Length: 586
Image 1 (cartoon, rainbow, N blue to C red):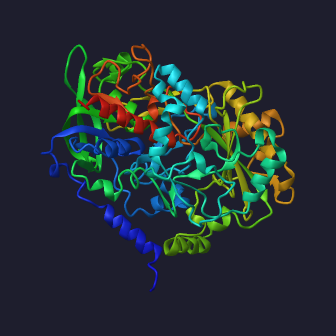
Image 2: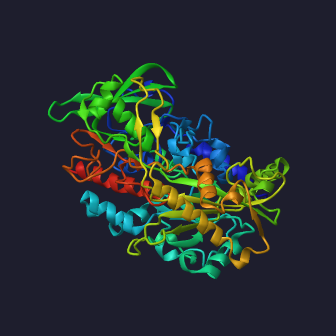
Image 3: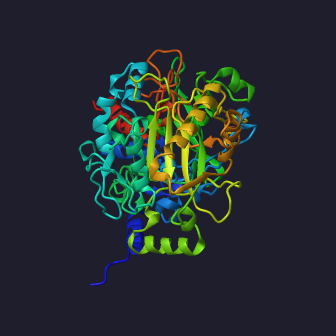
């Protein structure tokens, strides 16, 4: 019997996903009475859609601004994720000029596709530091958001699977802390790279801050360990492929409307406590505005940029600022769009003695060969993301009582970001250094009173001088890491401007000219204690001073999350689902 090619299996799986639950036209479902309307079919929104429709009495509509993920090759192939930027699957945001970055603007990719940013990100899965979850719980006055109380939700989310090459993973993770019974696939890298042994060797040679960490999913992230990713065998596992998989889309009470861009929430009733249970949207980028109403709640899951943007367009935000752009204020909530924070990073390249790096994979003939290998049997280098190991560190002099990392290494077998200063025809090794706990914050603001105008995205990168100092420390730390004996015959020299960082002035110049984002915006609709004057949502994620509206996505974190946020967003959405179910269980 001839085995079925992997590409055929993929196409069969994709065709199975196209169910009656996914719609291209509102007219096909406008007669349905919906209990919940979810804005955004992304990381959090699809969790809510799945969990709420476990109750057959709830009719749930998901409004997704983008198209389907089905059949988009670059979404399926993990290594090709970077190809999704500046495409119809990306919102194609650009920041405002960043004063601390020499006035540069920064490209800001966000998923404009079913699955949201879980469909276009680099799939890195980090649960995050236990100390930060506990701090969040303390700040908002709800122990339900603490590390220990969230453990059942991590297990509901995670479905640990074998890597594509089924290699022996003993010593690369701790199986006792993972779940095989969840929905969203998580795995180790499915193809080895030449630097894997050297990275682990350097960690063991140097020890101390660079010590080998068997599994950062334990809640103690500090040290260097193997990257964990949302990859299911050879293909990306997004919220669209997992929580909206074919076995769930067959539910009669789950409706997903694609290409439906929301303009604003509609004030439906109430004077003392205004209620917002209506949603206004347009289809396919134009045409007349449509409206849909939820009998119970609107669940806003449009992300750290989209959610505050929609709130502001709806008249929920700082009254004076709204008036200045011609939007009528309905609920004066000043923190909407404020406190935006992100992980600013620099990519630090070295020339190496080796020819099996990403540069080889990107040559047209080699790339075509590896893509064909992926299609045929789901193996080869394209089953991986762009990094093989992560490192997490505290700054010098920081209290040891916290395990929240302050900066990160993303270690890669090649040049991650194009750099015009690197010499042609060479091979590279990169350590991206990223700030996990920057003090600088920015904002999301309205550009105009046209709800379809892109918002003004200002992350405020490096406004606080201490962030520059910490980035300096992180780059110096990367230099120390590559000084380990294991690298002596492999790493040749720094390049791409990194060679000019042997003075403090040169190092700062390198940072200001190369720093950018690692695409993890959070906290622009932050959670605070119930009754607090600051913040946007209460601990139950209901918008303050509003009825019928919750926000569930990365915007609600009280301050920036000290890890890659997708795992935390999944888990917050899992608990949010239970909070919502409990509110209507009578």
